[in-house]
Image (cartoon, helix red, strand yellow):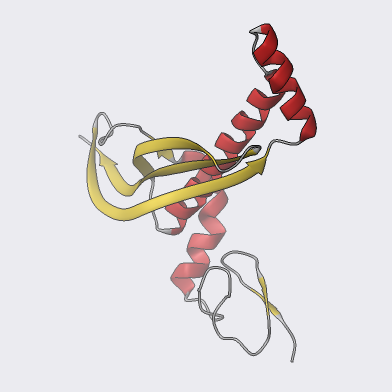
Length: 153
């Protein structure tokens, strides 16, 4: 039996399954779901982020649910050494800082994709958390509420 590629997330699935093992969407998408997928890149670029619970000058029409983006990264031996030297000298660890920035950006990108897939044009109440999972592993999570809004007239 041949495999199939999920039109929603791009995951390759075994041919016998009717639902995607990665995102759970049906093998057969509705015309509305296909339209949303085709518009995804444009909608990602227009998505608005807010750390507050509202958007200035707009009415939130619909709350679409909580969205998250999580990234786990290992520091690596060179980042660990850089951080150790920086700690001893009392300076910033630019290598480790760069990894944290990349992880934060990746977590926000995952959050964005989840929001757009729910039909949102904004995410409110965004909170970013950093958690050490071990001596050299870090998790960055971005959470918020996907919403649909319209501008006040």
